[in-house]
Image (tube, rainbow, N blue to C red; front, side, top):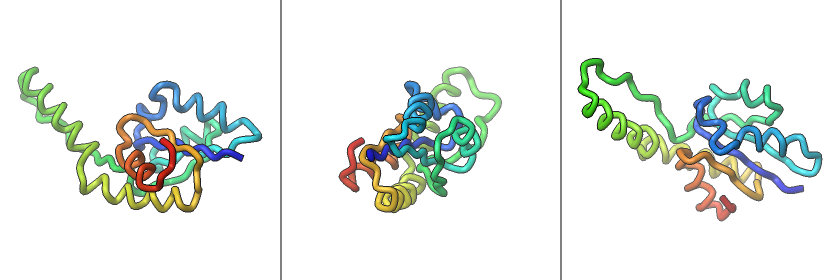
Length: 134
C-alpha cells in the first residue's frame, strides 16, 4: 500500500497550498492508500476534522516572530516584512532541529512520497537526506 506523507508549517493558512488539504483528505479516504499529515499541534484539530490522520511535530522549521514595530513607513514595513519571512522560514536554529525530527519520522513512518508546502524547508531537506521522493 503506498504511503503518502504531507508536511506543512503549523499555520492554518499553510494547510491548503495548491489544494494540499483537499487532496490529502480525498486520498486519505481511499482504502488502498496510507495518508498522514505531519505538522505542529496548532493545526491538528483542523486536519482531524478533514479526516486526515495527524502526526505531531515539535519542530517544523518555523518560528513565530514578534509583531512589526507600529510606526514604519510603507517601504520600511515591506522591507522588514520580507526579511522577517526569510528569518522565520530559513533560520538554521529552527530548521536543523526540524530536519532531525522529520528524518526520524520518515524512518519510522516510511512514506513512499513526501508532499510539502513551499515554506516547509526542513521537510524538503529531510526527504532529500532520506532519499524519499518529494
